[in-house]
Length: 398
Image (cartoon, rainbow, N blue to C red; front, side, top):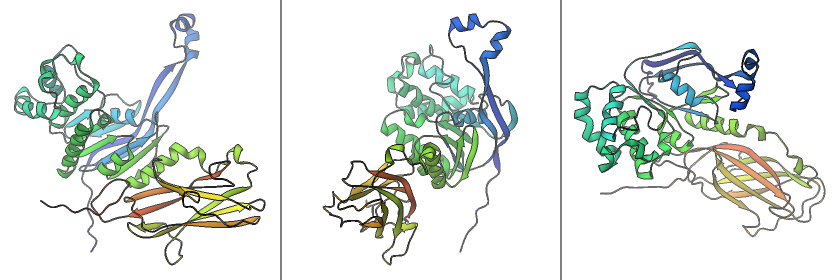
């Protein structure tokens, strides 16, 4: 039986929003003095950071904003949070919103951590009585100990974000905006933040998260929005969104043949995946066998040749790689024309998600190789409760 889940009410609506900035070309004082007056206008240009974006964000969803540096994701988050105003379009929201967008935003450097807790919480809409009730929990969560009564100008960046995050998550927000701050602080604090966001999800709160970490987005988010040059190029499933991001980041490589590959005697033409019955597949379950068939074409007879492969996550992290040399395999001579070599993985133990396969072929491995990047994408499915790029059967006992 399939149970359909109705989406919650819209808590943030972005309607045809654009944001432009005026950028000066004359950045030095000398240039600015020289170009004073009417001619100065020629040394200014408009830069559009967010370009006609329309989004509806429903209550109880966790949305990941993805994109390359300069794609507009942080600007969009600031627009949603009301930190900056749109050049055109409208943003509508309801409920209490807490924005954690920049380290120490809203903190006064000459005030102590304690005083800044009250100041920052007031900015986020809490009364003094509410902060009094929450203060001990905020202090404990931040983990900054006795430094709570030290001026924050003496804080490290990690202490800044720990205290700021602690305040934000204790304001009982309906919508939480988070921009890359989970990359700051030690591993234990990052995990504490992740657990609190997971708790917010379970409570039905809405979270909009900007992160460069694919695993973080896949763990926390149930929707991905990918931006490129200020425009939305994808809005949907998280794993598909991460794959689209990889294509955005590496798009120039697709279907391109580097000049240095010209004239190589052997090249990789395609990659296919086969199950045990020899049927071509694009999906595999954890623990299943999988054969990677590397198709090659030789422009001349090859008395000796070698081949290899690697499997990457959608953000380019290599999970496994091998080649015929490492396997102690000597390939038979290859006549001019088409051929192939098979690599069999006895059991696939990659985590659930999408992966790219790269392949290479050459006379001698790693020397003058022809490489086919992202020659095939496949999806791993798993019903276990693990996360990450490695799968394992795990049990728990107390």
